[in-house]
Image (cartoon, rainbow, N blue to C red; front, side, top):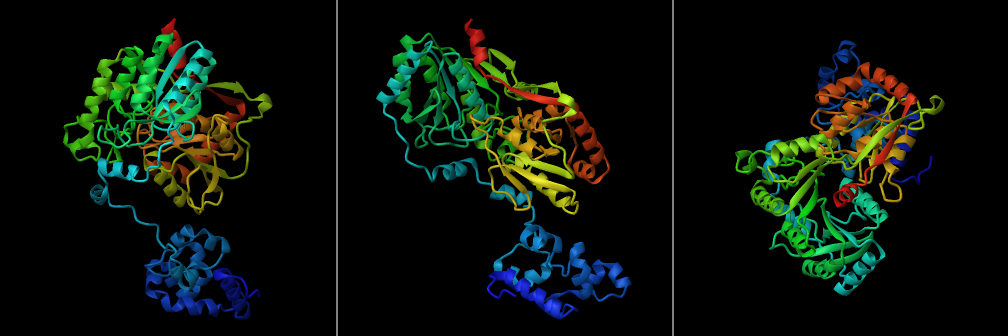
Length: 553
């Protein structure tokens, strides 16, 4: 025996040696028996009582591996779930809890779901959230007006003197997300067409539009043709744009997001460069409410009720929504707005709820699929393997269905043929097989390839709000996965129905019944046969650039 092994691992070996010397297992029993609730165990397990078996011996020999509990205050399954190292060691969880777990602060029970009513009282209002966002600001990386002006003139002189001015919510070249990917593709498309591409984002990110009273409300991060120049005050940006306007062939304004911006600044820039129209993307529903997913108190989809309604008054976004709508209405009134929806779902919800004036409304998907016959029956989109692999992709957020995925994982824990995976950059429970993935300009297919290489069979896309698009759904399908979702997921459900590579379930109970019943294996066999016949190919949009070109003809 190695007496130098540290911590509980060494004690496990000591215990195993003691059991070898004591076949009846008295060493473990001596620890467990004083804390074991015999009456509880027999009431909870009538088969043990009927057999007149010793409850302690039954638990130590069989019960713990069958998921039975030795005490009402201890869950065998929960302890093993929350402590996978104990599970992997194959030792008695109650013994570990008593000898080590209590002192180490190990979790016995999964924390209970918060009471929804209590959450309403604890949820910070929007201005409290703003304060949290701004308390750890870093000093801005300032760029001088001279440097910005010189770079801008050089860019225009090298091209066709067409300038695209885009607005986004953060640094699209450093942050990962759907809007950021759209900006990256639009920038590349603009440069291919000889256009200069200027992106402005707030130095200080905010969970709403900026107010005059916000510190750094006028500080903008400037990115020109993919090069990050730094942070410059709004007045300097406006004045420099005004100075180069006489030399422009054309200027265009594209609004991808206004989080953290002052909409009034967009109008000033439009006026200084002499344009009367703009292009506005419906990446989400921020033009309708500062709560861009339209989830009341970040929990339930609200369908954008009237801003003066009781539903709005009881929401954390309610106080901001009416002035927010006033500012959006002013912006849409002062500019001829060409609204672009990435899906019919987004268009229909916006038309039903926004009531904003606009010159045109176009549906232009961010990407599209076509299908190639698999060569020789060999589908390159996903390798075949034994067992079933189920995954979640992206940010582990409640509105994306993270909690539902975790609950499904726990419910299917006993099915050893199924493994659960996570694709993304967040910290997730150790029980999930994690594949870090970051989609970048240099590797825009990174997620698709990771899903394919891991042989994922089923992707759970359980969004609780109507997604306006979903790159992840298309990436999952192109990676060979079968997508499961719910009817409230917006364009996720629409894509699944249109492409025939998944199923839409009414609720989580129906989803769980599918996983626990025979339909799962039948659906998987059908899907694998289908993907052997056809290989999906993903083609990305150039975003606003083709629309600008048609408008300029």
